[in-house]
Length: 185
Image (cartoon, rainbow, N blue to C red; front, side, top):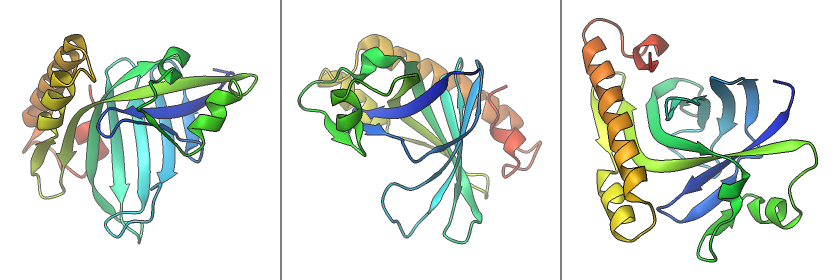
């Protein structure tokens, strides 16, 4: 694809829109977007990683690394891809990392914004084989408080269920630190 893109992350808990302006886009096509990134704020537990957005599957898989560049774990977000319409956020949404400037200036000519809405469910695959599901409580709270729709909740739960089935089907058959273990195929 020849168009230039800019990535945004829309979270509902906390309620924020973040311009991922410092993420380096390594690959971009109809199926995937691959980025390399550093954590937005300095952290002791990790420094950054590489992420692959599986655009049609609703999954973003990140290889998380520590401050020495060593692999820590896989972090899999359940997401949905949106276009520029998702930049129209309510007044309660915190705009981070230059999102306010991007929106107020009407974007950047020739640049297509892609917004990934975080549907709150996270699946962490640890090197020891432990697979954790996180933030189901946040999903319930977000729907209860009207931050997301029941359709978004339903979509997130179905994607997570299918992805967990895939991971559990591979468990014991391959090394969980191998990228092929977490691929959503």
